[in-house]
Amino acid sequence: MPFGYTGQILRIDLSKNKISIDEPLELFYRRYFGGRGFIAYFLLKELEPRVDPLSPMNKLIFACGPVTGAAISGSGRNSVGAKSPLTGAYGESEVGGFWGAELKRAGFDAIIIEDKAKSPVYLWICDGKVEIKDADHLWGMETKEVQNTICDELGEKSLRFAQIGLGGENLVRYASIINDMNHAAGRCGIGAVMGSKNLKAVVVKGKRAIKVANSDRLGQLQRWLIENMEKEVRGLHTYGTGYKMDAGLEIGNIPVHNFRDSEFPNIDAISAQTIKETVRVGMGTCFACPIACKKEVKVEKPWDVDPVYGGPEYETLIALGSNCGIDDLKAICKANELCQKYSLDTISIGVTIGFAMECFEKGLLTERDTGGGPLRFGDSNAMLHMVELIARREGIGDILAEGVRRAAEKISNGAEKLAVHVKGQEVPMHEPRLKKALGLGYAVSPTGPDHINNMHDTGLTSRDLEDLKSFGVLEKVPIEDLGAKKIRMYIYLTNWTSLNNCLVMCVFPPWNNHQKEEIIKATTGWNTTTFELMKVSERAINLARIYNIREGFTEKDDWLPERFFHPKTSGTLSETSVDRKELEAARRTYYGMMGWDEEKGIPTQSKLEELDIAWAADAI
Image (cartoon, rainbow, N blue to C red; front, side, top):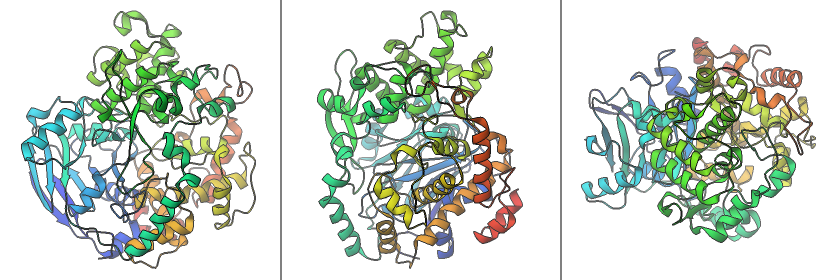
């Protein structure tokens, strides 16, 4: 077994209380690495086609990667995957903190959870030992209460938690999984899958050292980062995410009023700088990371906000802020706390509430629908009330808990045109009318719109361009371009960034291509190369693509919502929109460059052979 892995994958059948361990060969680890590679492999190999995502037949997979738990910045993440109840497609989310490293130290590279427990349970994993324990008394509790209760029961203080709150229990289709109360695996509704299995929490403790091939080299790289913090990650270290909102608003990248408008005069009121100056009481971090970009906020009036739940990131500040017309920072902090307590994705819930506010504005929803009160843009109390109703599936919250696609179908009367989603998943807080390659990335992503494994046309730095030269991309491409050169750049860049989902690593540490290769070599002892690593990522992307094709998705699902084919109402993008013909042509070019059929986007047999996953062709 190579360094960096434990060599053990834990399987738990909740219906039979059966616990077993797989011990894959090194070949399996080197071909799929971890994270997305593991999840896509097991979902495609082991799930029957067209299963209901909320049925016992779905599988919930927690997966680490080779660098998870190594003493290097960015290694504190794990992936969680299943068939998504939000999209019906391949579902995967990444999350930081300490849980993934602790799972490795407890002896496992991944957990595959099968079937459904007869009544609520939680898993207790400690240094290779696994127990399925009763959780009836925990069902309905908020995340902090669960953590304190279990620590008391087990007589342990230093435990790591992956758990759900009311959102997961009530099968909100965009429920998240919360690590240690302030790190969220937010996207794709994986928390609802956990709730459907009557699984409240996975609690881990491990004391085993994670063996790496060259700890001295990892130490050298970590020292380089610490010595260059001021130069490389000053903004993140000082403020966390969301410290350039004024510039984002100026170029049109800040969603306002359900992605419709562009004017939001009080953007500075909800920025990371204002958070630092007013409500921030600390900065948290993840395993082995000196960047410490996680805000911790405390509010006492008019709402009480506990800093143990962290603080709002950029996506949260915009989704529950300007996208809902809200510039009340304390209200956004409270909404973020509720989402951490209840395990709700802040992106999806913010877009869903913004959608409902626009429906109310247009008369598609009335006070009778909302339970007697208005639901207007800018109303902080209404926004917070909606978060509560959605978590509990009460009143209009029951419809909105289904996500914007299903809610729009229920509301009808033109609501579909207001629903900002791709494949059923709500769009993150970045503007495809401005960033054209990002828009293509939203369209073709297997999970629905993804802003992390994507290309931000306006954000390419000189370092990014220098890294791209090592892939053979030698010239800059204009921001407004969406031709073949831009798509080639997009493919090379996103094939590389998607590698993070297999490793599993954070995107924030400023490792260049060579340094990342060195990290993997020093961790695993493999003689890996950038070429091999690109193919690991491409292999996982193709497996996720094939999974979706098997589930009935076609090229028609690789498309953007109606909103983006129209300009914003004013400001920078008031005369700019996504061009349908340009997007369609770009999609064909992307398919062809990926080695897929140019019209249908189906990976060819020769491409699968080239990636050493010919077995996957049987699923098409």
